[in-house]
Picture 1 (cartoon, rainbow, N blue to C red):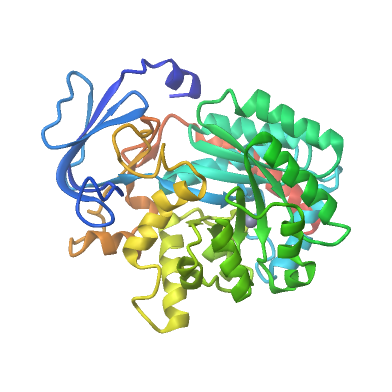
Picture 2: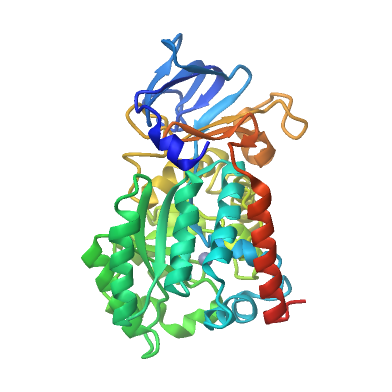
Length: 447
Ligand SMILES: [Zn+2]
């Protein structure tokens, strides 16, 4: 099924997910506990919406998906990623953030080396397929936006993926770039039913960084969208006076999304809470790049909304189960407390509804509340890595893998069915990504 035929299907199409053994609705008003747990029930999707959750719902001639023995939950929300970076998977795994950026990312800003529209398309399309495999239904793609062609290839792949996406366009104070950002939002994002826009920048108070940050903060305000920055990811970035720069750019507020937020002082954590600044936590990337460990319990106490992110090529996997497991494990390993924030329930919430709250999208996605968009997963716990049933909620975090994701629906349309991505020919995408990666490896002399 391609994008066009998905859109041409009647909006009243009914799909009944029948007889799920366990439903995690993420809506406490619908079931037990914080995760809104419901045993043995059906989920009815009508068009692009969740119509009902309950017992003995009727298909009325619609399609039926048997979920006997399965777990049903909302799709994962990935609040920080760089999808083109599948082209540089495995690049300089022996370097920290600064070294990795200088070896694997910054040289690509040179127009002679920048990935072509075709290469970006292939890399992003490959990443979107990887996201579907793990059950991500909404992704925020912080795009380096090296050129207008890069931006077009990037967005074309996102549009074709069927995913709900947020395109974060990294811009500068250059008026031509700002014009293109306005144009892209108007022509390629606003008209698309599953797309939204963010302004991406890099923060600091120096004369090198501040004018760009100020221009991007103003543009985000003008467009009514979030400003998305990397926030004190590496300890060396303390010298950039990042918080000072954000304050001077008038960016501290609920429309600021900061990725990583690792090297914060106590008073800065308090400030993030007071200003309702949002945070993206990317634990696998933080380990790979020797960045450090986020102070999640302190951020939680300060009232900061945090979502989970996969963070592109610095993660080298799109496994959201692995990300949840590591987010829990890092806090336990450093606090020596098994009860520390986030618990299993708290991380499942963070990976779904919590991410939606970070993006201010919780009225539309993040839980299986009727009326919300039908972004739904059906998981098979009956596999060697997951069975038998002892406590499925714990097992989701500690045993779950992408292989357990059987069905993925976005807006009621299946992107993965019976464990396979729907109607996508993988081989040309793989081949184009392979060609792009080989070129980059050669020009950057990557070992
Ligand atoms: Zn990042």
